[in-house]
Every structure is written in structure tokens, then in C-alpha cells.
Amino acid sequence: MYKVFKILFSLKGSISRKELWLYSTIVLLLFLLICFAAFFVLTEYLMNRVDVPIFDIFEYYKGFIILFLLMSLLLNWIFLALGVKRSHDLNEKGITVYITFFISILILCASFVQAFYIYGSTLGLTNISIAASTIMYINYFIYITSTIEFILFIYLCIHLGFKKGRINVGLSDEKVQN
Image (cartoon, rainbow, N blue to C red; front, side, top):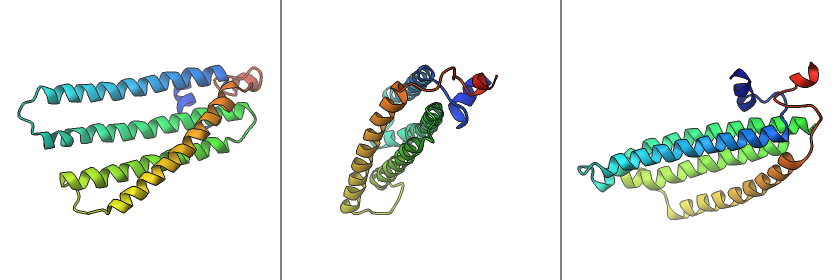
């Protein structure tokens, strides 16, 4: 268990292609399973409650949005750790992985700000009014950074996922050292 925790959260060591694909797939499936389960449980709960007005439904979804944001941060960190370890296996620093991580955090923050100002003012969570042009600029920022992140993600998938690394490396550099 400690080895799995070390692989998923530590930036030290290296992993093989097989381990990259295995851990990435498992983590992504768990992330989707948790988010869908939370969403469906919440939706089922709200559908069975007749006394909840339509505007109060958004109050319940705030918890889901916070869960999704925290899970997204966790997922980004795990993919950063896996990508950096795979870069180490290829004898690289992993700067592209760090750039992709930084851009994804920017997108996450911009999306949160956008959602907070759009839905927060509608629900009375904030009394700050934001101009439509500002929302438009936030949308442009999200579109541009999302496009850049997607291009970097495709590059990283091809580069880290298919390129051969060092021989006899996996789970960590311990195999090479022993």
C-alpha cells in the first residue's frame, strides 16, 4: 500500500510505460466512479424530495461542485506525479508535465471563478455583479488555455506513453539500485 501511495503522490523515482498506463487508467476510472456516484446519489435524493423548490436544488449541488473541485486537484497532482516519474524514466526533467499541471490549475481556478460569479450572484451567494464582458474574457481564457492544455496532453500521452525508457525500471528506482 505504501508503494502505491508513493507512486501516486511522490515526485521522486521513475515508472515504466506499463505502470503509467495502469495507474492512470485506474485513477481516472476511480475518479469518474466517485463523481458519478456522488452526482447520482445527490440527484436521486433530490428527485425523491417533493418539498425542495427548484432554486434550492443549486444549494445541494454546491457540495458536489466542491467535491468535484477537490477531486480534480487531487487528480491533477496524481497525474503530475505519474508524468514526472515517467519523465525520469526517459532521463528528462519533466518541464512539459509541470507546464501542463500549471495550465490545468489555471483552468480549474478560472472555471471556479466563472461559476462563482455567474451562479453565485444568481443564488444570492455574492452581491458582486460582474459585467458580461468580463465573463466573456474568462470564457476566452478558458478556451485558449484548454486548447493549449489539450495539445500538451496529446503530446505527453504520445511522448510519455509510447516512448521506450530505461531498461529494468519500474515502481521506483529501487530496482536499478538493488
